[in-house]
Length: 71
Ligand SMILES: [Zn+2]
Image (cartoon, rainbow, N blue to C red; front, top):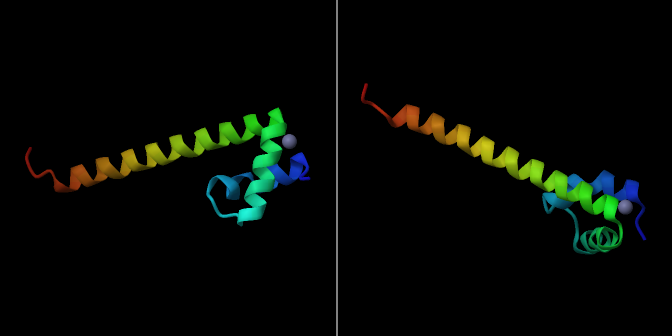
């Protein structure tokens, strides 16, 4: 059984899908039973999603400014 600090240590890799099958399931099991880690993972997932959206948005704007020739 994983401890909370194990989950915290590997939370970033877990969200990025960089963990092995068994390790991923161990963390899932812990998250299922531990509300603190569940919240932590949810917040981290959200933060990463928002960062990805903002990152894409900035890239898209840069693309537009490059391709837009009028004005
Ligand atoms: Zn925990």
